[in-house]
Length: 189
Image (cartoon, rainbow, N blue to C red; front, side, top):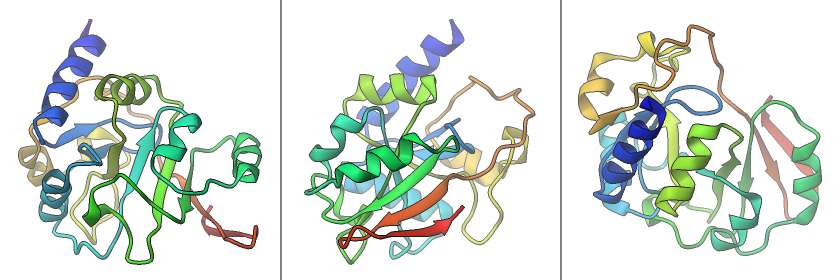
């Protein structure tokens, strides 16, 4: 029951341009509608982070990629399927996203989530959701909910209850960049 209530409340917050503190397939994240420039700006402000440092967006299904990047390379899908750790891919040609979310080189970092809460949330809102670590910029990302700074908790519009009691330490995703020439660059493993 709590799971469904969290989904419903999260959708309301995201649709109204608010910020969400939620569990992902990796660490706890601060999220918003990835197409809402004002909401994205609120995250930068909350994290005390410059907007030159990009954030990740989450999608529920890989078939949604063409809605947000111009030319997805089909080889990346085969590569990511062989990896068991959640992996974020940096793609060129970002489209249909908040302008302050797209890197100056036109790229965007995207992860296809396997986590059921995230999948349902993204499908209900019908938009990609920003996912950035739930910490003030410069501080280490929290590995469990209890480690999240009170300033972050007070700065969001809704805190998801689901998985708050999970004490299994989590870690950020791997990050890779698939270059235009077909080569792979591992940024964080």
